[in-house]
Image 1 (tube, rainbow, N blue to C red):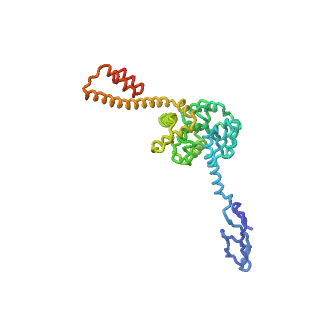
Image 2 (cartoon, rainbow, N blue to C red; image 1 turned 180 degrees about the horizontal axis):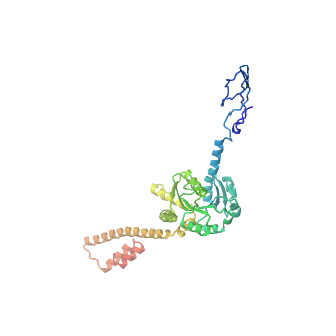
Image 3 (tube, one colour; image 1 turned 120 degrees about the horizontal axis):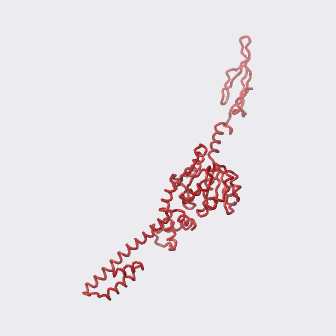
Amino acid sequence: MLSLPCSLQPSTSTLSIPHSTPNTKSFQLYRAPYLKLKSYNNKTFYQTLQITSLDAAQPFDYESRISDHIEKCSKLKIGIVGFGNFGQFLAKTLVRQGHTVLAHSRSNHADIARRIGVSFFPDANDLCEEHPEVILLCTSILSTEAVLRGLPVQRLKRSTLFVDVLSVKEFPRNLFIQILPSDFDIVCTHPMFGPESGKNGWKGLPFVYDKVKVGNDELRVSRCDRFLDIFAKEGCEMVEMSCAEHDRHAAGSQFITHTMGRVLEKLKLESTPINTKGYETLLNLVDNTAGDSFDLYYGLFMYNKNSMEQLERLDLAFESLKKQLFGHLHEVIRKQLFESSEGLGISLGKHEVEKLASDVSAVLPPSEALKGQNNGIP
């Protein structure tokens, strides 16, 4: 029997070539070779051969094995530290994409992790001893430093990639550089969405990142790219931006958004039978910001040096708007008062002017009324 290469061995089909029919070609996929044995008296004799043929693609064929290898190499082992709402939110997508996900948190989320397909470790030492390629920090802004200092980083591989997803960027960047061993890679990111805004998918939503420190060797560069590709595959708008530039933009957008949402929440706005589209937008803003903890809002203020400036600008803008409104009101009332007195031929004395001034002050806010009195303006 003729032996074929090992990748073509399994088969149930055989082919026989009889002695008298050397030109027989009844085979499935491969031309059957035949073996000439001897020639006697001008007659040639052939040996009957039995060969195997490939009936179907085998699971161990070369291309399939290469494809599987490439697929496995594209997956990461990711350890999530801080398995609250946002950590769970990210974990679902990581698991769906085929990555191995581990998690650790101060609270016991073992049941939730099991349902998602995540391995939960109550002890951070156990998680670090699993040697995840990436540590994904999903803690609150206020607890970040304590959590980072409490991690047994000595149990991790020296080339581990650390990633954060905080809403401020210079703060975690500086912490990583200060606390982590110098061999570790650092990428600061900010998914500009959350469980509420990203519940229907991440397509078109911004994902900001800064490759703070990534080693030059091919494996480290590839690992960083594979992590970022998680969000690119989901359709995120990938925005590479320095941590400092991010914080400048975030203070003027995210912090202002949260501030206005919380101010409106204090007003206890309610839906009405005649809601306009604009009013519906305000109600939605309240709902979106009220769902976040006050710690998040305080963190946006405390750990972004640009937030105080934005708060002061907001205060000045509100005062300016009030001045504009009450300035127009003051002019209208003043004009009406003096036109009425002139039409009646009345000359106002000091007592009458003071009385009119007090009447105008009654409709003005305290600050504007005081300024009017100090300036002697009715």
